[in-house]
Length: 368
Image 1 (cartoon, rainbow, N blue to C red):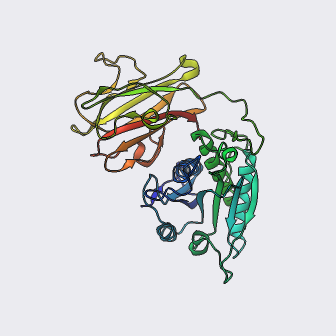
Image 2 (cartoon, helix red, strand yellow):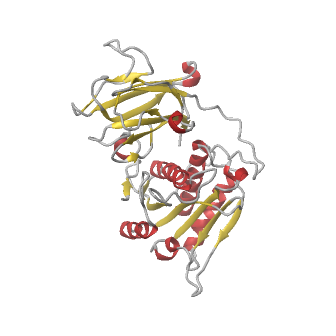
Image 3 (cartoon, rainbow, N blue to C red):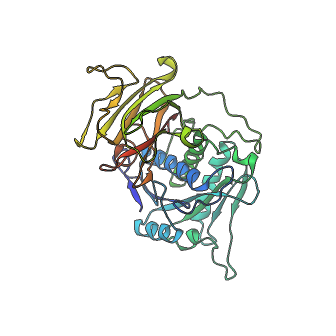
């Protein structure tokens, strides 16, 4: 189901639709990277950047759910945007980014060229702005052919090419692609942004382009753990880049009752986490917690250790240029939309009221 995000500057300069490829039971292409997951991370970063610059955005999906292209097209046409782009990744052993435009009109070509320029600017090589047609001369891709608005279909790179996939196999790199897409969209609309702003645009590191990541301050680590019903206090997790249960805190099938979390390192280089949880039983947000400092009640965690939580809000303080990225898992919904900062994302928190959270992912990323 599509979700609309309003402009953050109080007025809408354009309306844009983002189609997110695959999802749910359809993982898309998969080898070194899973397409449906990377595409969603790219699209969410694109959305955040566009909304921050006065664009109202509608996304075809904001979590891992079934989202066939036919439904994406219907949602896009119902929303009636000024333009749209679809986020995908490629397979077939090739190398680099490519973007497909419509054979009809010039707006689709302009949109595709604007996006390609920004993707090249973050260091990914390009295979070009392309068209592909059926035997009758119509556009091959349904998303380009059937959407009413000017459309561009972005193929970020090849998930089955080991070198190319190094350009987008980490969350920061996926966000960099999404922000590049957003800047291309803003160029298309003629909406100004800081041309020197590279926040969130760490260049891809893969061997295909030969580029090295720029010398930027490394995001600090987050150490976190949960107190879980029936399991007690579970081991600490660092960030969310591990495999299996090392990639998140919690235990699937068991409700989280409290969360412990802190950045790792001195405050001036690591910042400080501010976070709180929503108590499902009481239906209220509990007090804010700062890192693992003891609060007025002598507790160094968010929650009660007695009742389940169904919402989480987090913010990173004291570290300019970075923000906290977090995501919640519920039995009913799986992994929900990721959120960056307190008040960002869908309704400003991770979770869904009434659905117990069972697992959490947290990481510090460059600010969009």
